[in-house]
Every structure is written in structure tokens, then in C-alpha cells.
Image (cartoon, rainbow, N blue to C red; front, side):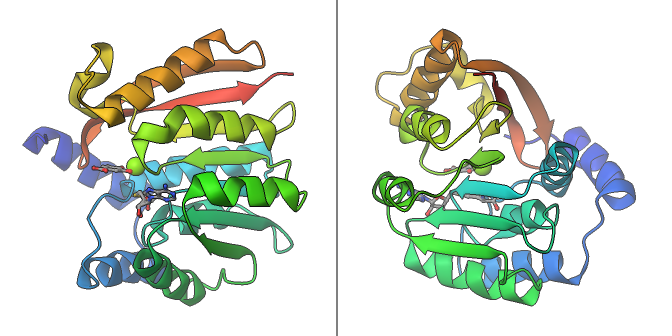
Length: 222
Ligand code: SAH
Ligand code: DHB
Ligand code: MG
């Protein structure tokens, strides 16, 4: 679901405020050439992630759902030279494309792409003593969104920012869709966040080149 006006406004903002450089443009072009779905965050949304991470002074970031590493590049560019970003990806073909895109962006020293289902790799991270992360970006299979927020909380500290992408999906989120696991998972996640005293959160709707969607932003308070 897109609208010509949303797209032209996104182009206007993006050209002036979040223009692509060679590494970002090549990341998208090579992802497309490799047959990956064109579902990366929009450039102005990537820039928002970058600004939020910068404002936090983030040194450690966890991403769940890498695809071709486009959002990863925006996030990792907010980190200092000794920062660390771990991104979790189920599909080994996506992970290979992402690793090449991340290396071309000069970020391979601070970014690690881990292959596997996130519900398997998250417990491994915990067992290794990884974290607490300063920022967690959740953008993988939406059916598991509530599980991912629970894991993000386990791997966080007071002050950690948790961001969940695609929480609106054309407006579907407002009504139960028992036959749609993505909507069910996102609604379970929103309800979990609303009940969780350690999280203070909001969610906003967005429109643009990626259609009508939205994101949840939560701060760990205790
Ligand atoms: N964050 C990316 C887009 C991610 S698209 C960006 O904005 O640039 C969602 C990704 O999650 C896909 O690559 C998909 O393969 C991955 N994914 C799906 N199920 C997963 C799982 N169980 N564990 C980890 N990654 C998963
Ligand atoms: C889908 C996934 C995303 O992360 C996204 O930003 C848009 C669409 C999808 O699975 O359709
Ligand atoms: Mg997304």
C-alpha cells in the first residue's frame, strides 16, 4: 500500500536529509540483484535509527533481522570505532549479502552477522554473556515479536532503547487477525509492552515509500 504523495514527500526529505552514499546505494542494489525482498527500512527511517543511536551515545547494538544489512549500516555508523553491533539473520543467503555490504561500508570490524533462527541465537548470546545492549532493533519474523521483546529486555539495562519495526502493517494491527501470525505476534508484543513495568513506550504510524506502517519505541526504565 503506497500513495504517490507519500513517495514524493519521502523523496524530497531523503534527497535533502538522508541522501544515499556509495555504500548505502550499493547495499540496496546488490540486495536487489541477489533477489532479496525490497523490505529494508526507507532511507529516512534508516537515518532516524542512526540519529536515535547517536543521541543515546550507543556503544553496543543488537539487531534482529538483517536482510542485506541496509538498516545495519545506518545503525553501525552511529557507533564509535570500538563499538559493536551484532545482527541476527535466519537466511544464510541474506547473511552472505549482508556481510559483503557491511564490509564494503567499512563496518566489518564492528559488525557481526550471526546466522540462525533468532530464538536459537539469542540464548547463545545470553550464554556468552553478551550485552547489555544500548539499543535493540527488532525487524525479523513478526510472529515472534513478543518473544523478541522479552529477549531484548533480558539483554538490556535501564536506559536501553528497544525499537520494533512494522507494527502497523496497513492498519491491520488495530484489530485481532487470528489467521495472521504476523499481526497476532505484533499485538501480543504491544500488549506485553503495555503490561511490562520495566518498559515505557509509544508507537507511531508512518507513511512513505514503504507504505503505511509504523514503529514502536520503548525505553527500559528498570
Ligand atoms: N532490518 C532489515 C530488514 C529485515 S527484513 C533492514 O531494514 O534493512 C526481515 C529479515 O528477518 C529477513 O532477512 C528474514 O530472513 C529475517 N528473519 C526471518 N525470520 C527470522 C528468524 N526467525 N530469525 C532471524 N531472522 C529472521
Ligand atoms: C516485511 C518485513 C519488514 O521488515 C518490512 O520492513 C516490511 C515488510 C515483510 O515481511 O513483508
Ligand atoms: Mg522492517
